[in-house]
Length: 122
Image 1 (cartoon, rainbow, N blue to C red):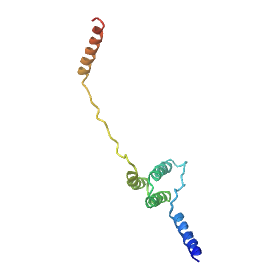
Image 2: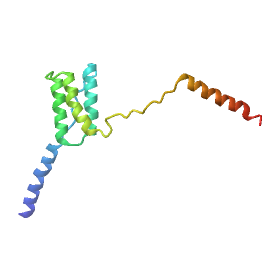
Image 3: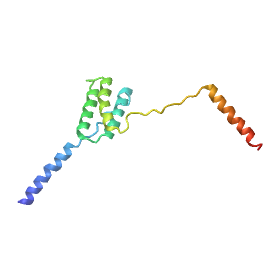
Image 4: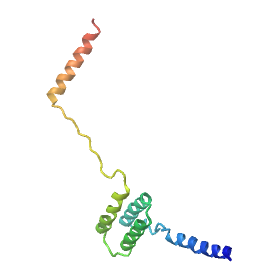
């Protein structure tokens, strides 16, 4: 009897884990450009995030957009919270651009040209 009880216990556990797995929605509409772009954003976010609870929320956001319950600005606003959460490098670092006055640049160029001309004579 213990073996039968073990197999009965193992069966429901396997079914529960299968129902807990969340699948990606495949409701892309390539003919509708706005929806297609929104689906691509959803898909990228889906691939970055592995938590099943967050994935369920992503599915709900996309479903509400496909049923016209929300507009695109609200969709991207809600999706943006999860995009930041899943992304390691969301903020772009900008390098400082150093500028130079034209007069300074010309003086430096003239000096380097003069040095190159007279280097060979020594």
